[in-house]
Image: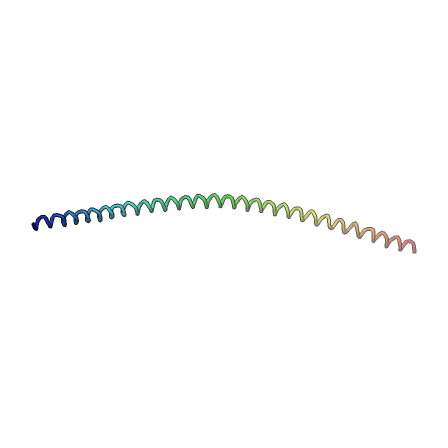
Length: 103
């Protein structure tokens, strides 16, 4: 009877060892799978970051172009302001000359 009692124990220990081995192998398979998925996610994030960077670069170039145009407009407005000031001062000078002549 000792042999029949040791038989279930042996079978149970084999099942336990087999279960442990399967768990270990599945863990060995899961770890690289997780790493591949993590690498895939990293690649996706890098691609998204690159697309965002291109969008930002376009926005920066557009802003730079707008600033350049605004600078040109500012220069033209300054020229116009100077011309207006001269035209305002010119009649005052004429009035002063007329007053001087009429005296």
